[in-house]
Length: 114
Length: 114
Image 1 (cartoon, rainbow over the protein chains, first blue to last red):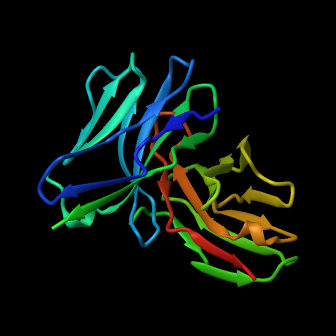
Image 2 (tube, rainbow over the protein chains, first blue to last red; image 1 turned 90 degrees about the vertical axis):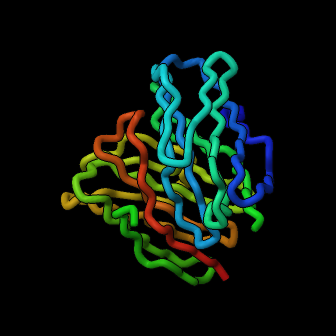
C-alpha cells in the first residue's frame, strides 16, 4: 500500500513568493518521523527538515517550514521567498517506529520562475 | 557536502557482470543505508547496517548483497546484472539509526548497464 502520497507532480512559483508542496501519509503507528528532501538536477539528495509525530510545534529550518496536521495525516512543506536555486525535485518521506525502512513519495518537481 | 562519500560516481558495465559500490559514512555515524532510485520504481530502500550488523532489509534482490566493515564503510555488491538494474544508487548514514534521525545521503553512484 502507498504510504506517502505527493499529489503534485509539478509546481511553478514566481521568484520571491511562497509555495506549499503537499504530502499525505498513511500509518497506524503512533511514533513516526516525517522528512523532506530536495534533489536538484545534479542528483544529490539534500535533507531539508524533520517532524516527529510527537512534536507539538511545526518544524522550521530557515526558509523551510513544515505544516504538520496530524489528524489529517498531512505534512506539507512550505518554502518562503522562493529562489531560483529552489528549482528541484522535492521528496516527502516517512519512517515508522516499528519499521526499519524509510518510504519516499513520488516527488514534486518545483520550478521557480524569474 | 553531506559528509557521505560514494565511489565511483559513474559506472558503465554490461549485462551479466558484477560491480561493487562503496560508501563511507559521515564521521561518527554508525548506521548505513542503501537506496536505489529508478524512473519506474522511484526511491526504494534496499538495506540497512548498524555497526557492522544487518539491521533491516527492504526490496533488495537476491543478486545484490551488502556488508559494513569494521571501519564502518559499506559496500553494495550487484551481480548478474540486468538492464533493469540501471539506476542511481544512494548510500545514506545516520548516527545510530533511530527513527527520528535524518539520513544524510551521498551523491550517489549512477550505474548504467549496456
